[in-house]
Image 1: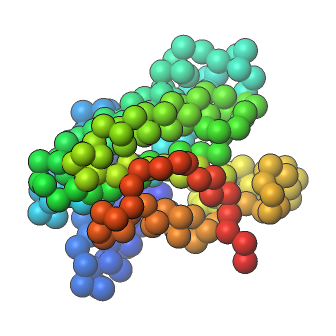
Image 2 (image 1 turned 135 degrees about the vertical axis):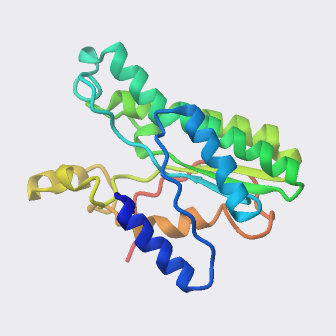
Length: 219
């Protein structure tokens, strides 16, 4: 998971070294128009668009965005929905339209969260934004299936990255997080990659379907 422009450029360089295309298009997902433009820019840079993975998202630095739901604020609600629901939705819509116009079909994968399908005390607004994205993922899948566009989502638990490191800094925090999962540890990116790749094959053989909870794969 790339957290900085330098890291993204490094990963892009590794992909290019394999003889593949890679383009870094930094985008502020709190700006829905910028998010939609990123889809168009990516298609132009690569000569078409066949897969969109909506992976960016998270918490917003607004009072009331985390903690007891009774302390939530309208500003926190708006910020969380903007980051985790509005921009991913309109990016997916833009991608679906483009894939339909291309006549090639394609795959859209929204990375949601286990908080979307189970109660998430202290993270209610985040969970609600992801739950709404689950519902809209299903609706979009029904509507654009006629264009051979598949729309799916997976719901991981917490993944060990630089972004989540503050929440997994102590053994107590790690044990607390792990207690939510059948296999008691936080996941790593390699645990999520296989289920993420499954809905995005190079041919449109698979369809839109249910939302798997990818907490982690067994060793």
